[in-house]
Length: 313
Image (cartoon, rainbow, N blue to C red):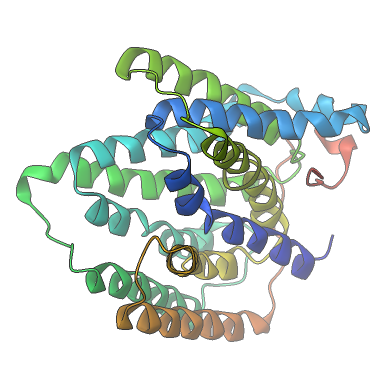
């Protein structure tokens, strides 16, 4: 797979993540960890289903412990911290701090072996994207940082580092096939179930539409998106993907507007302008080319498995 194609594949995850808010809102009042357990189970089974036609894909689960730690730490760690942030801090502020992760991806990728030096355009593009997200949140008029919510802010800040770290380090284990993500999803579902049983009361979707939204959530934003992202960060332009990730909250808001869940505002238009500008600046900076990243092999079976493939639904 060429870097350009892998970048386009990774951008599919950004599009799917823009549906996260809509499907979550439509799924009713299912508690966060219960929702994570159900949707990650669906996402893991989605990957496992591809093994019916590609039995060799199951060998991707034979990885060293540190690969499993990276995958589970990235998927479960990020969501556990984010849910904690939402419990301890206002959602708007927690969401804004969380969206430092695209900028962190751009900055942390400079330490990857074999990557071209970090260009000013990448940083400028990422900062423009962050300004776009900030404009979107501030435009809603619900940003009020309160000292009493500091633990929640710290959790949100930490989850930005966790997801950025997971994304960048995934490139260091590029020999690990994307099929392994199915195992990470199932492990995350199991850990989320344990947290749900300890911390939450079980609430099931109330009707068929809420069940459909939950299934769509598990197959798309919490399923296929992680497989697409894995391909993108391992073989595509990780810095451009980082900048383009700022499009997710804007696309999400546009979808909510179209579905009648949110109003259209001038801040939305400004956010779109800033994020598009940031992506164009970053894309222009990336035209200078980059060297292929050095890939650290994870297991002999993984090396023989060849290029990663995304599951087909």
